[in-house]
Image (cartoon, rainbow, N blue to C red; front, side, top):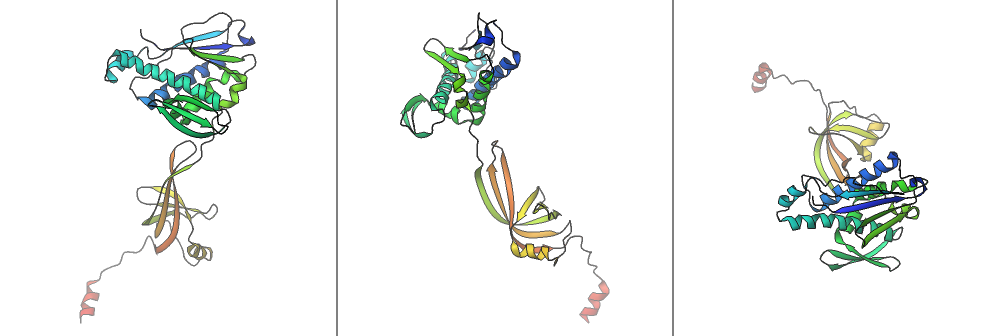
Length: 302
């Protein structure tokens, strides 16, 4: 069995009897598993995901041996279009990305990033606002920017906020050991993600009125293929509505200049916002059928 082992060691008074509450350990390990899965997706989205398995405990603390890719290893060899050594290299890359991410989160803390400089093909130098610097794998910086990965890292260290659990160590071989203490907990806070605009367009379209909403200022429309609420910023039209100078029915059509703004919300979900900038025409709905009498045609021709 080929593995890339990551060990997690929790320490503190609560672990003196060699136990740790499942409510603390379970979510932490699930977060670690998801963190590696998301790192894998960033690098190489394989059908078979990395698996992390508990292998051992030790006296006085809790040690988990994480075996990466035990089940999918043989498939990884073929999916990576290379030989066995390249598959192992891929697993090592995921582990290195993880170690670099945790070290970088600890190093940055509440400070701000100032600039980045490429050092080699796979490493980058980051300078902070106090001129301190660190060199990390480029993939670790990408992971640092990934909101989901950052949430995984925060949830992974969640046991540290509990009384009696003072620290956790993460290590792969003696040369790569990280100790995270209670004092580091706030460093893993996930920054709030702001909305980001994607695209804004303005088109002349016909919209059918579904509902006239006076209270919250948005009208409900149908474009034929989509139903949505929209703000109306046409002041002249709004004055006409306010003074009741025109009547509107649920099947009426409005020809409008419609602004559509696409954006990513705080959860990085794509959404659309609609604004009617100008009402160009109003077509009454439920109109009567115009009857075409043949006698009228004959009279008009004489």
